[in-house]
Length: 184
Image (cartoon, rainbow, N blue to C red; front, side, top):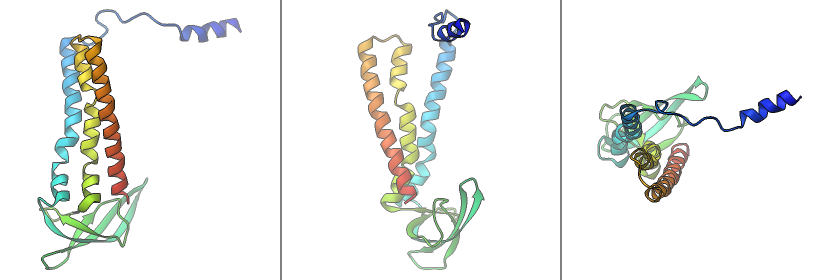
């Protein structure tokens, strides 16, 4: 019995601090920071076209009617719709958002390619902003890491933690608002 207790107690004892060579060197840290920045910027860059569509800057305005949604399993759906342009003309068969339900009728913007329609207005804009908010959340504590890596004092690092916490809270609120808008 005492051996088991010693093993459990030993598991919670502090171990040796990492010695030199156990952390990434300057080149490794630079690579990690570049990957972190890339990971945070990708959602921002990849969502530009959806933001332009949701704001009506590109595409054709009209009305989307979701015709059918087929279950692909594991909570995934493939939805088809019919898009009627505001300027008149024939309705176009398009791919609808997978969070739609058959029978939904909403304002939408047809992509320049003409293959899918994206919701517009406040719900469309909020759902298009979900990924940029996620990117902001990924980048929130990057200033703290830069300050830590370059050996800044505790004062600026504490300010960076407060700033990172604020950005994380804003990011979380934005992501939740975007998801609620997309699924309502």
